[in-house]
Length: 454
Ligand code: ATP
Ligand code: MG
Image 1: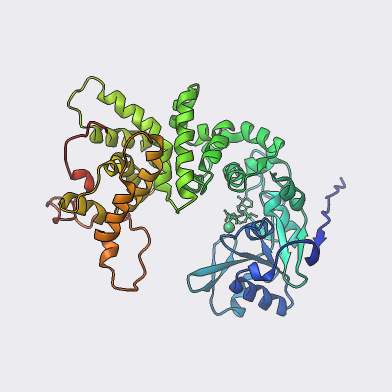
Image 2: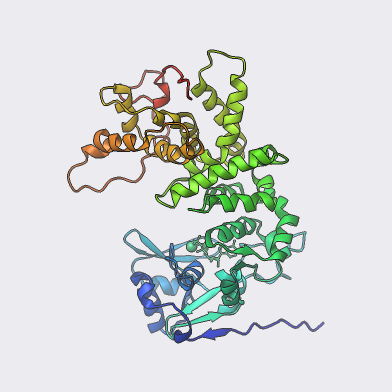
């Protein structure tokens, strides 16, 4: 049988008709693009960077697509490392920055490697043309190219139209694309939230139909993508969409079941995530703080239920247990990093300490600001305190006290402050048989009376 393959026609948008200026492109990415073009290769900026530049946003990273093969790329750049087994990518390294440079590839021939459901395997890719490379990408707005030689934008997939209409739309049939790689459903809500776009109606239908397929995706990819759902400044929207489309039910069934059929609980979670957004719009938070905001309403309810009838209960302890129990299914299924989930538990347990003013004379308060957990507990308190505005909070006082008496106060002049330290990122080298050194106590071990306003 003779089969017609639709050959996509590219729309080419010349420099004067789009807003991408080379001034906005990372100079190292430009170096890579120019060198490849000089060697008579096609060299395009691809993926999220083109999308973000067209939207006037600052891209997180700059990826390059080229028809040069990985070995040729390596020969041309001394600072190049090839990574990946199935499909080799070139990482061109400039200090801490990596410009990921990939040879154009196509989605594999569906006749060649079909699984039992008639879907082809996502990872088994081979080299292809620029058109094929555009077509294998996930969403139209992610399938645009910028050609450094002509300064034009190349659109094989209708991405510009969708970018203008603010729509996240799968390239090709969403019923196939989401089953091929269910993680794309999470990416759809993430991009919709991050960019303030809508998901195309057919894509929404397909997500509702196939969200449960997420249960079969690789746990390590899901673990990463879950942490990315706490979109900076738009986590509320992202989780609302994930809940509406059935993604949350597939990912975090215990939480989704707790939310289902109870509008009050949902409102509490959306408010908590909105509070997180208000903070993350101003300063960067972490996935642990995000998890704390997501689970806090459920944990608060569980801790209160545990307390019922116990006059002398230690609320902080109850909260810790409730937080550990709430997170346990996700921790187990996705093997969430210890550094992330332990910190989320700490935040939920300890954030109310920031209600009382710090006392510089109190060794316990000095220990707290010097503990690695403090920065994230403070961020969590900044967010969750918004849920209880009628209570007194001493957030500013704690921040000032941390600056004055915390670890930064001992940095030599002019030294770079370290990234957020995380006390849970390494296992203790020795079993905790002996008591730990003084000053190295976990703040949760500072036993004290539960405050009436806790
Ligand atoms: P971000 O700003 O979040 O990094 P991004 O669009 O750059 O967004 P990446 O995950 O860095 O997203 O991926 C880079 C590009 O690779 C995407 O723009 C898309 O074209 C393609 N891509 C990534 N993941 C997939 C996938 N699962 N299926 C198809 N294409 C994908
Ligand atoms: Mg990217």
